[in-house]
Length: 125
Image (tube, one colour):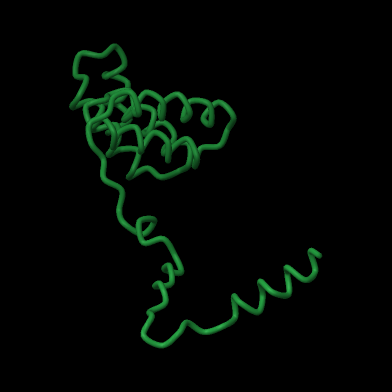
């Protein structure tokens, strides 16, 4: 019985649409929304979550993953000084001195009164 139903279903599914009727459009091969650039709006909760995950990767020793998470955190909350500090540390351990200096400079700009600003300023020179 199932075999007959399957044969019937395959024969009906392969029949062309009657003339005058349009077939529904085929879905795109790839989802176009995945290609669109991501829009970031101020979201400190998402930034905090990204920082938490970035810290996990940093402790694990995966600097590339940590740097990507810290970068995401700074995009969700561009006023998050800790995100820029952690991004600078991760980039420095990766050997990317230019990116580390840029992140450290932003950290000093956002948190001029922090305890470790003097040490960060030494790194910038």
